Length: 115
Image (cartoon, rainbow, N blue to C red; front, top):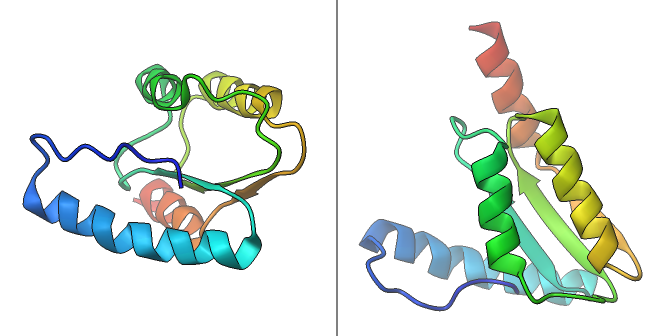
């Protein structure tokens, strides 16, 4: 799994979430047999240039990845920035690129739009 292992200045609740999510993601990686990159955002956080810049920083140095699965939990955002993110992923993955969008992401976007 591709995560930052440092726990410096990370609140306890978030550290606990990361620890629990890490074991779930590791199990998912073992199940599908390829590395998993989680892109998980709150229901009030949209894909924008700051998210894409943070993503580039997080995965800088990755190149020529054979296969990659991405779990994308977002309610949407800037189409151009999402396009740049997708093109970047396509550029670093040589084999299969699989993107999983949890049903919750779709439900959140419908809920936010219907308000």
